[in-house]
Length: 254
Ligand SMILES: [Fe+2]
Image (cartoon, rainbow, N blue to C red; front, side, top):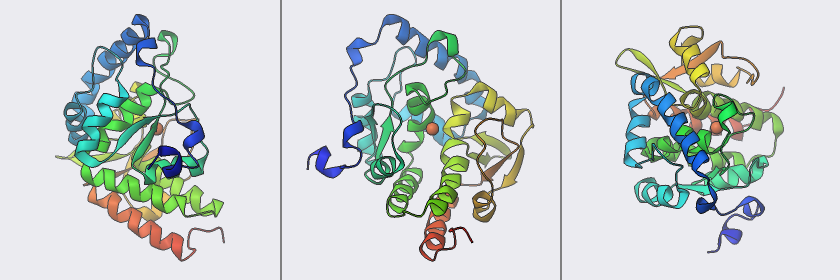
């Protein structure tokens, strides 16, 4: 089936990654970003993130070729890192997740903004997100998230489910051998966000779906609370519970 038929809402945003167009400077910015993040992540990232990075052979010294990454990823979990032109409307985004395609930007931040970009770039998307897609339970959770959200039109319900995405996929932490480890891409790809957790400026609550659904997302400040799972089955189960809540209208505004 062609991608346009398979992904009618996302089709206008799908592009090719012109790998040969990246400059030497851009490859060297990627290498610098990886060099800066790895020492902290070797100590503070979830083992599953580090395993995914290694399994996919993500490059340290040059930008990733998405077709090569996707070939490895697809063999493992059926996921793809699919190049898109940038910000996507929610229905197109959910449609892609439901099809096990992660919308992946191809542009890279410049050397002047190594720590922060207002919108996700390829470093956030590939370095931050993609290694977790090699984990089978996480991969199934994310597809299910996309399928459920793609079937919902109520905005209050989608906003609540957005909180579940935020506190897992973007800013998730897990307790491993008594320590808090990061697996959310916003923590993985940002030194400042990760330090906020490591240095204890952020409270860590045990993951509870009800509390997550009641905690609004604030994008313009460091987190004051995040939610630790003890294994990835918890987010898989939480998504099924969230689906049940959504189906019976519990997530709509009273
Ligand atoms: Fe992200």
